[in-house]
Length: 101
Image 1: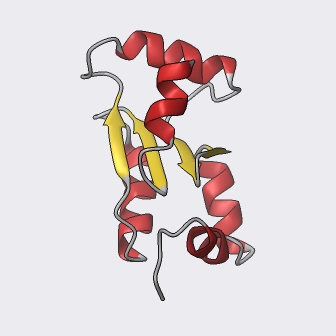
Image 2 (image 1 turned 45 degrees about the vertical axis):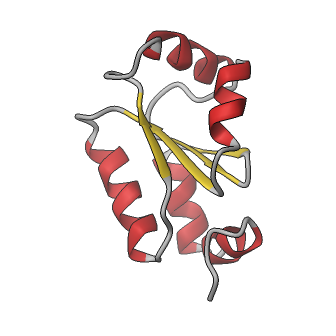
């Protein structure tokens, strides 16, 4: 769990994903289109990725992507898209220092 917290705090936006996960790629593209430069950790190819996956599950994230903004778990694709649709995502990204505009 400590490793997840450490990785999640390395940048304003951190995504834990799988290299073959379409929704992970969609969320990454959405954030990059806003000008965010997230740290992306693909747990299916990283050493000890299974441990990371288990720690994410203990935090309540059962699938990828697992998105952290400002070091806090936001959730998966559904949560990020909900924030985007209700116009809360951009302010959250600004508050975390992920956007300068």
